[in-house]
Length: 277
Ligand code: ZN
Image 1 (cartoon, protein in one colour):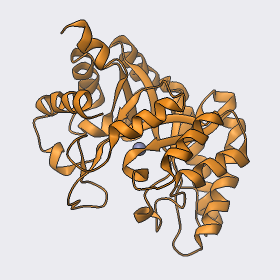
Image 2 (cartoon, protein in one colour):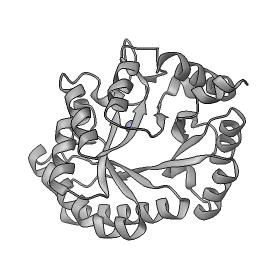
Image 3 (cartoon, protein in one colour):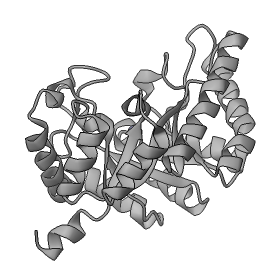
């Protein structure tokens, strides 16, 4: 591998969910051998493991742990479910700290038996309530706006403006925004809101993939960069113009790609990253 190749992927991070058929030990070894420098860990990848030792294993593979995915699902009409969600989020913060991840990504949740406004209020209250725990553990909380097709049950935060507004009202150095191109590429205010996010110091993470034509599953048919219609390079240029210097995180849920030979697929991810992001 020549030095240009090294440089090209020096800010590439891959989510464990992207290569879901691999366990975290296999992912660490394959990512590292391919020259990937960053890893974001999904909580299911930690099942049954000593979290501290797993974090050390990632560091031993020269991987930067970018984030833990995911916390959230705060919005419930039922108070008891809201309390359970808070317990789970405190646990997730502790897991992030044990792993050595600096950030927990939040899929904030929504409950279709109440209004989106009520869900949003519960989300904001919950994130506020988590700040003491997060700051004590030194874990940042990144609100990720989700595409409006998920406004029924996955997130009542659906645009960058909503995420920026909420992060602004919460006004804590521990709370910011994760930009995922899959969720926000369609938004006519995207460039403006990314700029605003950077200027306010809230731009904490950048997730990339593509929107396939046609998309055959609302959750599990994301594409590699270049397989669809998202202007990933353009959005990345806005994110970088807004001052973001962190990792570009490839996060692809795809039942189709999970059937690929994962070693070959990893090479495709790297190629797509170099050419189309
Ligand atoms: Zn994401």
